[in-house]
Image 1 (tube, rainbow, N blue to C red):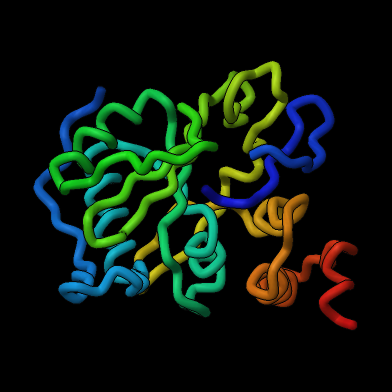
Image 2 (image 1 turned 60 degrees about the horizontal axis):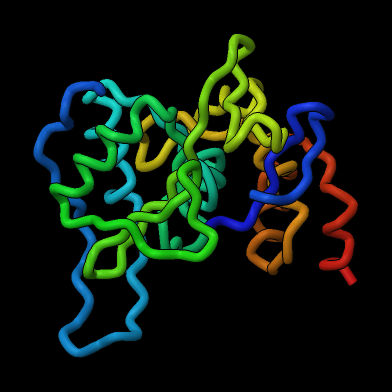
Amino acid sequence: MTGRNLVSLLAYSAHSEKSRGRPCAFQLGFHPRPVGDNTAVVNVNSVDVVDFYRTITQSGIELWIDGGWGVDALLSEQTRPHKDLDIAIQQTDVAALREFLHTQSYREIKLEDARPWNFVLGDENGREIDVHVIVLDDKGNGIYGPPEKGEMYPAASLTGTGSIERQAVRCISPEWMVKFHSGYDLKDKDFRDVSALCEKFGIDPPAVYEQFKK
């Protein structure tokens, strides 16, 4: 599951917790794990993401690229390997997404922190898609999980656009991508992601990242 913060429905400040037509036939282009190798890491490459995005969106399903690939979409280049693909999707499209991925041999990975609004689907070769489910309210905010928990993707966060292999994609906006990178155990890769976004879009780095400059 993705470590990240979503904004409070009441305060708009980050804090931690974190059917349409059937898609056409499609096969993700990951390289299979070597036979007998149970430790090889399967990374999601840019061609995989573009093929998946085109197939899903052309079927009428709306999605936003999130996580590491969302950062690289905003930067218009791949800056590091990604072990999975994070997406945000509307609750009304979950059944169609599950059905499609089931045909591609994806099954839900049993995780203790899995929830109906956040779960991971993976296949036998180790490729994974981390799904974040939202319900759009009348203001365009993506309510994430039970409304009483006050977690959401603000409407402004769902306005981002980027590109992967020259393919235009919808993604989390740069300002909110930076805000979402807080409230959990930060790593060097988070610092690099946030630094690159702040430099490109003229955003002030969050104070919490000062620890990485020492």
